[in-house]
Image (tube, rainbow, N blue to C red; front, side):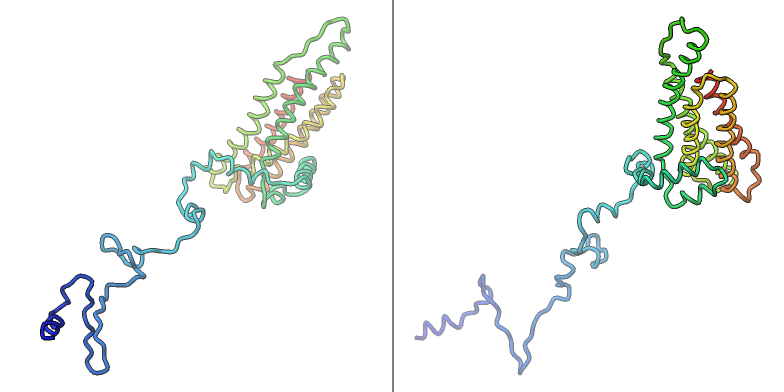
Length: 273
């Protein structure tokens, strides 16, 4: 009995797995609490930083985390998705804008497209005009040749397609860009997409006039060219004047007017001579 009691009196706090006894003083229990042991900030912040930011934090979905990353503006210029908003137009909107381009005094075109300028008209109207000029220009040449001498053989001129492509696409893209940079230099708040939209729809009247220019009557062709050029030029000049109202840039407005007249004359001379 003495040996067993002596064994129980040996200190055991140094043994592995042993739990130190809780010292009770009266009704209080002494607890050793480490003030740094806070599970809400585990693991600790790196480099002595703020613990509230260094621990585990609630993050959003991977998509949300990706959207928070900064993006480079120049990459958006080469992204197709950046231009999808400019093709988000319905048939009613396109028809309304087409009708407005036929009526130069029908109101401010920029106020109609302010909420949603589109590039649909620029691309499809220009493309349609290219094919119309190439096909009807050859047809007009055939009719004039048959009217003059029906015995002469005729062949399709493929060069009409190349000329129509570089002239129409070049005009519809370069001229609005030139006006955009010029007005930016003059201090006006220009918008390139709106300019492309307006100049694109201004070409729609040339599609209709091309069908009339196949009539093999030269004086009638020049009359149609003059009416078409004045209507399209008035549409561009009046809307451009309303857009830059308050700036004394009348020379730029007159230049836009005569550029449209020049385009009408070029179409007549080159494709319907």
